[in-house]
Image 1: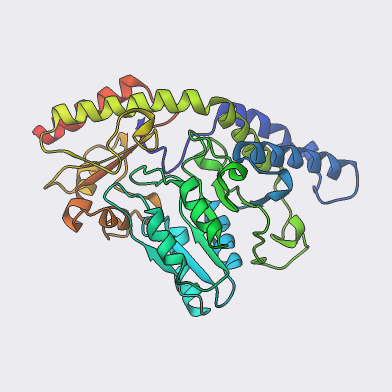
Image 2 (image 1 turned 180 degrees about the vertical axis):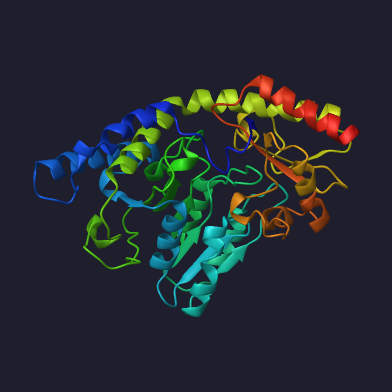
Length: 375
């Protein structure tokens, strides 16, 4: 199989697996919250993972809250971070785990404001400025760092200057960005950031919310008071170590990964454009690193049904949109937000290239698509 769905999930890096295996052995028993040597060893490993995660994002280890993934992290940020009667602003292209919080915020008396985006999927900082001037305080703004469907990179530094001028807090879903984009929370002015292991060549089932003062979300569950009372429950040592290792590797490799993967994406687009008449690119259209998220290419083939097309390509792992909405039958809310019609949204494909993608796979993918569509 040719795997071009890295935006849905990335393969586990062998070095991550190697780091996790010692903590999955029977003799690695030890609750990291226990006061004895076995527990202390596990706790030390988890604290090292916190440090590696914090270093990737420009934060402090004590600001890292482990979660089951980015969905839980996003929910904790919004449902725990927006007080009753407070303001909340999100963009129209956020992940389902952000947008899914909005009905509950409305029920609590904190009706959210959804900011539109331009044709490339970008939020206009001046529109945020005007919006914040009308909202009650405190206000939490959540704008994703990189879009999971069209690859748009948001101007986080500009948005942070706006939120700071209004005394608002800024959270970002950085799930797609951290493997290839440098993000320094302190330098940018971010108070919250969500990340996920399996989008960083780490394990599934683990993620984190990084919460920098003065952002302190209320706990979403009760229990033993672990993680400063913000997220109760015994931490899974092996998964935490895997996430920390993945973050350390991302920090070491992201510059080279970004360059190489962007070159593959640009080559993929060139071949598709040459072989498939009428094809259109969605989202950012620049080449190279400036062309949005390195591994993301979203295209429309007018007149086709993308879901049906993929049924005839069972050995190609390509998506028609976010995996979190696959099977829903509705057109992508992201593609609608950037101006596509419902018909064109249903005729769109998302290619997710990553660390394991090769040029041979890119060329074979285009050849098979072109052959199928020509037939």
